Every structure is written in structure tokens, then in C-alpha cells.
Image 1 (cartoon, rainbow, N blue to C red):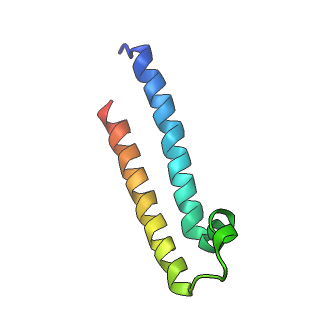
Image 2 (image 1 turned 180 degrees about the vertical axis):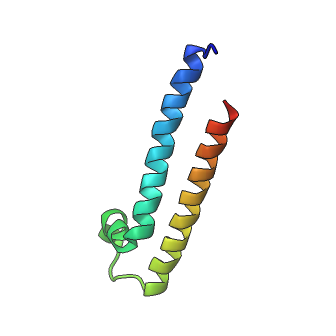
Amino acid sequence: MFVPPELKLFSILATIFFTLWIGFALFGAIAPYTLWKITQSWKATKEPPKSYFMMQRIIAILFATVGISFWVFLWTRY
């Protein structure tokens, strides 16, 4: 089966994009405090409450799920 070079390039770029997306989302789900320290602590005067980190973890899991779903959808299309 012949695969055009444009489709191969798209597949490679999509794989890199979704790998970064899922990796960042999983990092946010596993270590929300560290992610906050890296990205938001410089502008905070005090630490946010525990509920903030719980919501950040839930949203990160949601983003990881969406990223995996898009990636599976992409790979099952071609």
C-alpha cells in the first residue's frame, strides 16, 4: 500500500504533538504541586488550597484522556 510522503510527515508531527500533550497532562496529573511551582508560583503570594491541586489533577486526567482519544482516532483513520 502506497502512503504519500505528506501523510507520513503529518503522522510524525501528530505523534510528536500528542506525545508532548499526553506527557504534559500526565505530569500535571501525577505532580500537580510541582507543575504549579514551575508555572504559577512566581506570581502567587501564598500557596493555593488543596482543592486547587485536586481540580488541577482532574483536569489533567481529562486532558490526557482527550489526547489519547485523539491519538487513537488519528491512528485508526489511516
